[in-house]
Image 1 (cartoon, one colour):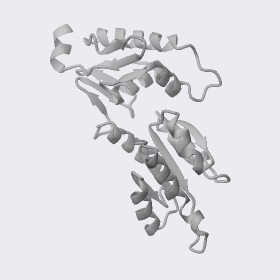
Image 2 (spheres, one colour):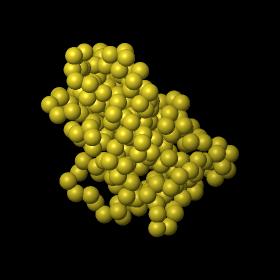
Image 3 (cartoon, rainbow, N blue to C red):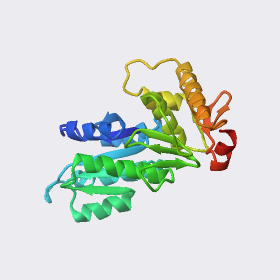
Image 4 (cartoon, rainbow, N blue to C red):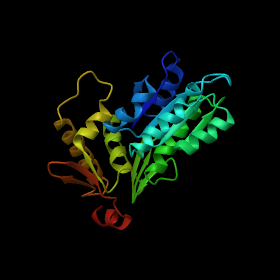
Length: 240
């Protein structure tokens, strides 16, 4: 999962970034709030975190409303990405941020770990999931335990295979482009590998799913990418 962390210049990001990475997010950072909407329009993010530093009551109006202005720009651009506003935010500012388009507001003293959990919840709900486990038919992914089960059978996956499958499950029924997968898997690498590496991961995933009784779970859309078709319990039992 990819998160865009918008952090005004000079703020200390390490604790929050560490908590997000431990929760499974790949982080991209931006320091100019005015560029967030434009940057998010051309990249593929699961969630945006706008860090809103504490501002005194006598601060200039522009300083007190910068985060709300950024939120309005994100929504005006037609972006439906979940957005969490995080930081020392007064009650009136919280109301303004929600009205401006925030999906959640994490008030101080919210810890970085709680912020990360809120982001996970926003991503799940954005994709139609209501619990920490991601369920698509007979297929269940447990991100906390890093476990995959198909009709109750446990499937052992590598970290990269798990990441590919999680992306497919989150966007179940929709085609996920190879480039999107590359961006999510290798966003922090200095060099992006050849797109054929995705074919390798999908091939291994198909084999392991088939061994657990689930054939034709991942479909190829030639020239575009891959799609996960949620397997039904009955179909898994039929081919096992």
